[in-house]
Image (tube, rainbow over all chains, first blue to last red; front, side):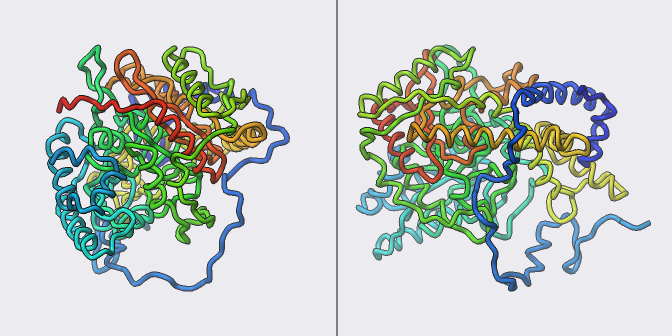
Length: 95
Length: 494
């Protein structure tokens, strides 16, 4: 399953990354190398195996549905690239 | 004064309690050592000396009034992956280069609650993605060790390269680190230090910048096994803020150090004898087996048949989780935002492309690819199934052994700027061949310095324990440490 430059461009766009055509070309080579190496997983028989999503065998802990924190507007926006009066300033979303 | 920096954590804590020196004196000694060494080693990306002096002052007051806590007055270095309130935390990424967390990670809070002193933030590979500390936004770290055959600067390993370099060069008593595929144990092995990754869930991930959440685990890099036990005791805790944090009570880790391992069954996995591994690594492993035999342990040959699939499995699971975790860096709420965009999509794409380094982008793209429609089952679900096979291998092995002994790394420290490894990412990934299985299975693993190779560079052995059995892992590590008598230090060329 070789990846071509068009596929890499699509993956970059899905990843919200923008790369030059030159970089896309070299990335295609690297990704093919990595994915080719990963192909060896096909040797493993996993027909009767359940996927392992966590190594912690425990039921998801639940907590009371109460407010435990909040009222920290200044903290929340303290690292914003742009903010005003406790709001994030973002590029125009709706034309 | 500079002799103070050579103390172990245990030695320093004892000296502080016995009032042989104050925390302020100890802290000043480290500040002097860092100022001298850091231009050459680049281990710290940020120093917090004013804060350190303030914390040391408070510790001295408590030591005087008999209110000393477990780590009272001990100066530590903190990997830049742990959020520290009011102190810049970047995970060594350009996308977080000005980020100042408004909150503290649970692991570091535990250390401060026990009286530790913060010297600064330690260098690492960007978002912990790397095995040589060369992907850091702040430049690579240099290993204090040098080959006796060449003057070329060597890597301290990665991703916790700053932590390993700082501990090896006596720039802190001990350091925090984190391990997703070997990022504590490989740098420890490359620098002649001790590194332990506890069972997944022992240390809270709250406030630790996320890479691959089902694999990430915090642990210490220290000068001795006893120091590792002391650090682990403080760093680990049950934390409601991390839903995968384990509620199990912690044993007294230090009580295992020095414990007899007579009758303990040590598993030696056939599959860890790899082609192309230097003979010195094999010889060291044989030496380790002999040391444990001499201490009364029983050696058992075991099989972990799916070992060779661990790295390819990891390079699906970890990038998949990373691509999802790193989606949060969108240039809106925190982190870098491009100046060059007008539309929303442009802002996302350019902010991320400007902020992330090459290795991080590569892994985000692999992760996006293996999770994308049409490939999800073939890659991601397949890898999760192989992951279970790898975990089952260990469950089966525990029927015939109590701990496992392996080499820690397939080589000693290599040169910074290794062009072969830079050109082929898979070559770099192979560094983690012995360590990555324990991350996939969630088991504790520890690297212990065991000898020097013919070039005078440190080599480590790895002890792998059962889930929640860091105690036996530490006991075996302490036996290896004692038998190896590893007292070598890098010569101070900086």
